[in-house]
Amino acid sequence: MGPCYYLLGWTCAEHKYTEPEIHFDLSEIDTSTIKGGIVEHLQMLTFLKYEEILRYIRLPKLPAQPQSKGPTGPGLGRSTGMMGEPEISKLFNWIRFHKVKKILKIVVEDRAGIPHSDQVIENCLNNFDVEIWDWRKLDLCSYTILAAAPKVRVLYLYSSGNRAVLQSWCSTSGLRILERVRYSFSIILT
Image (cartoon, rainbow, N blue to C red):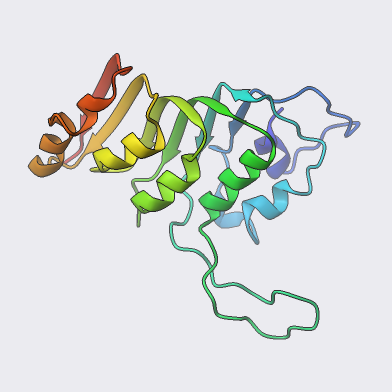
């Protein structure tokens, strides 16, 4: 049972769950119903442990814009108004804290509303070895994939049909640099 079950309100009968998880799936979570951030809820699940290699990470659409920070210390009665880091960045830092090194497959829904910036995506996947890329953002920059997942083997790409992006993906300085890629799938949404 992964974190999704606990965030949905289901509980482990004995709270002695000791087997390390091999996946991280929050795809069934309606993030609009969670008060506070997902990471704040996950931090309460101290019994969750993870292998160094995860079979997959599957995430729903998370807000791309960080929420303004609330009070940051005892006695602070008002919000600082400063913008914090995006929820997805906090989530990947939490996964990194749990000593995960490799992600065999990453699936992130990022098409609706405002997508995450390329820099946020790079920072999220920094130092993870990703083999299968399915970050569902339209017209994702080649350089983002090159920086975030240089050892990727399978790519799922989503395009709005923008010719410049398609040419960038196919150029000699684009995705063709990724020597390990054996399969790529382009999905054009209009």
